[in-house]
Length: 414
Ligand SMILES: [Cu+2]
Image (cartoon, rainbow, N blue to C red; front, side, top):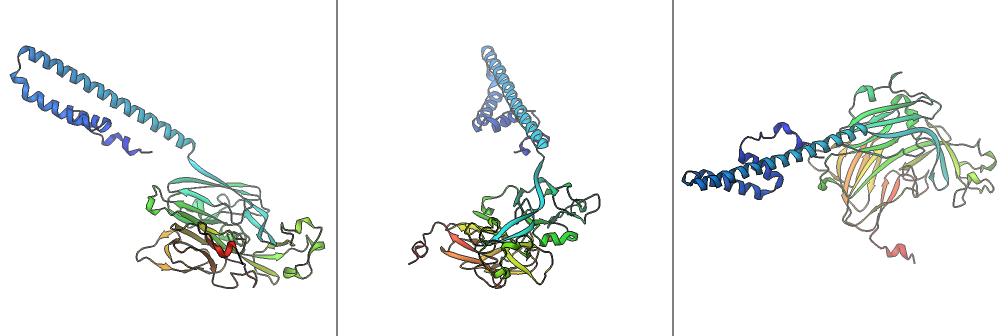
């Protein structure tokens, strides 16, 4: 939508023929301008020497020329009217569709985080992390929070500089959402970058139990050079969960977390592969029998989906640490440029790393060129975080995979 083109305040007045012609030329093509100039020069130079017949012919020509000009002005008016009509229609559309609306349903859900482990966590829309939202700079955003939990909640837009009425500490009439209630948070997405949402600090325990999600604001008028071929959001987290034995006592292996006894006949406790599915309940604080699941996009390795790239692609990773501890993430085989921390563009000098420590609550955007075909790991350097209680593969780890390269070793593992 090119509104500037039709801002008539700065348009020239239609006063002199050549100005009209030039304006017409700008609409109908360059040829018109040059023919108009030629006609004007001809008229002023030749008029005094003409006979009466010649004068009459000349007057007729001038009348014709004036008529042509009127027609052209009419054309221009028509063009402007058309454009104004289109603009009005666009404006009406924008008014009707002013807000980019997303609905978040905060509720308890059971999510599978590893092959044989499900946790009952607090989620937005049943997903861990919550829905990945994308806006463009300047979008008017309305996030509608539906509280389907048994206790109050709130929404914090981590990193956004917005009025306190939207994101300040919630007040009774502004931001605390009672059980069963709905609240709409509206803001203008004016800062490009990587952000995340979660309950306010007074409901911090809900964040630790899984209530978090990401949102990205893409710059308006993205230049091609600035747009990566692949733009991936990675939310890393740790969720503490207790083994929930009360619900599945009959089928619970007595050995606790590591007791892998088969539980035949209990469909709910069977994973697709047939191994016993164990159910954990997310807890806010560390307890003696609590297990910590380190997750990348809600999954423990090897369940975390791979990052698929092709040779030559520019790949951006937007890493958000929604967990409780700092995570030093290492990407093997590549060096990445650190583009931004906490949503702000980095200033020069450029910083290149192969490991980046993402603190609790922090966001880091990095970018690299996929120029080293193969299979690579993106994983925490802390063994506890890159394992599932000492077992590998597990925890915060995923594969970077070149999909256009055939790996003979993988195709034929002899
Ligand atoms: Cu936060």
